[in-house]
Image 1 (cartoon, rainbow, N blue to C red):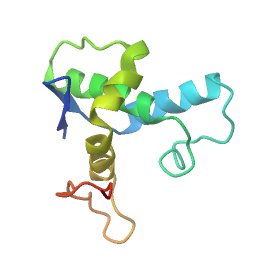
Image 2: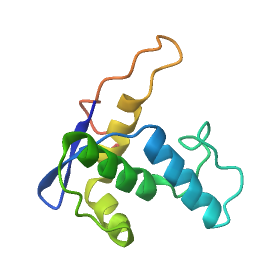
Image 3: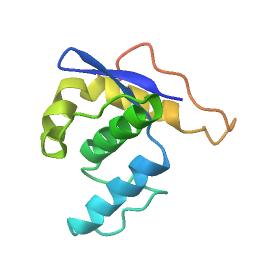
Image 4: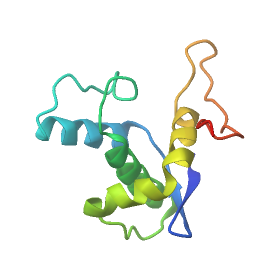
Length: 113
């Protein structure tokens, strides 16, 4: 299952799962960050959103058979364009502990104005 996320006016498929988590953890370790694991990346992993976005879109493109054109070194700017939406999408890829079912996409922004 993929979701859609818009970056610079273009829709991209995204799936955050094992693949994105694996490479985000590897990047964190390579940058010298300690204690980031697949189990805690969403709660304790700092500065991993860029990697999750990038590898999530890469996987989404693979799943849907779409050419992948984004560059890793630009992930910070991609994330800046879609940060709030990305944060809303993240929970949809993981089951809740209570029900074991994936969450639905939030309708409202989690950021208060």
